[in-house]
Image (tube, rainbow, N blue to C red; front, side):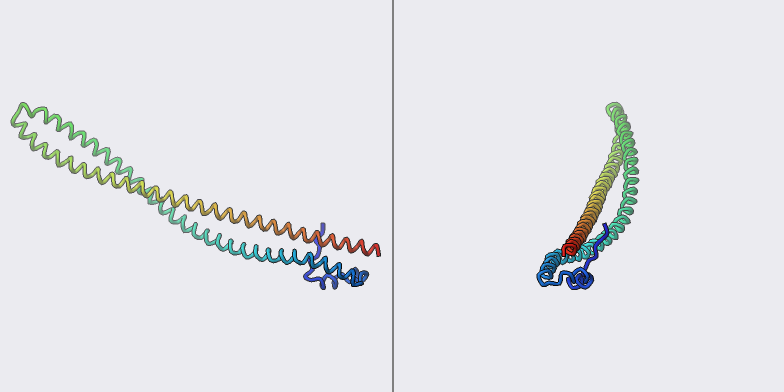
Length: 219
């Protein structure tokens, strides 16, 4: 179906179709035709107003979308750095775990040595004195190891806290992307609705022209 011409005013409609309106020059017909035009004009005005609203809204949404994309690009850069930082923390955790294992082995070794020394305490006074010295040294070593363990635990706690923060930021970025996609879908839906109304108006004007042609055939 060919699209009907859209006229800007009733006067333009009459001017462009003089041959048709000449045959219905009586004021009664002119009043009917103008009433038909005015009844459609309110719909045209409403559609034009809605079209302008949609255009402004689309431009606003497009600007917001571009701004959000810019923010997301910046966020991706930050996230990339955070991922690199996360890798560093992972390496630190691995090193800390390795050190912890070494400390545990060393601690067990010290315990074994302490146990062997304790077994000789009851039998030899000399061993007792040596054991006292060794015990003092072992206590110092154990104190140092406990300090190292405390530091390692603090590093692990900091690492897991950073991981939680990065996960929250990542989820927030995903949520913003979903919101933008939903907004774009709504704008596309409004655009389709407007096209449908425009086609409906064209079809209605075509129907009026067809009625005019039938009036011409009757008179």
